[in-house]
Image (cartoon, rainbow, N blue to C red):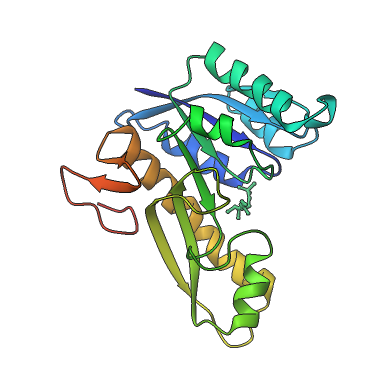
Length: 210
Ligand code: GAR
């Protein structure tokens, strides 16, 4: 099984969905490590409760991004990590760190990329008046939220939605999409070739379901 680390900064609900999916005997990945850049992240306790090694690497303890990224990298390599999943990890990496994990790091983003990169995606989707919103799992590249797309799920925007009601509809799909996308990548049915994702084996649906 592919050895996976999850990086978080907050509550860790996507992390929990990955941990739960990975409990299935036939799931192609095992979650062996959870790291948070914030010692107060609620997700750290949830990971520990699930019996997974969970630690903070406090970014405020490092003088710059490069030294923080080097500390993260050392933790990941010491644990024999093969694939990294960002799940609500809210820090930008140095290009060097990202290049060291090229093709082996995924992120989930709460919009239909390439729309609404960055933060406050639900507010911005409502402001733009889109009728479909959603979430995306993509490979991480140095440019923020710009990497090749593995899977997406769309949700309707409903009359009367505010950012919270829309976020609540999107997160349900995030929790379904990320495990499906991780399974595709960990099993080799999706892989990065240059700047494109190549799908093989059973044809995967674009939302990651098989
Ligand atoms: C999720 O909605 C995730 O897509 C988003 O943060 C939330 C984390 O929730 N990620 C980003 O905005 C990345 N830039 P969680 O901690 O409960 O998984």
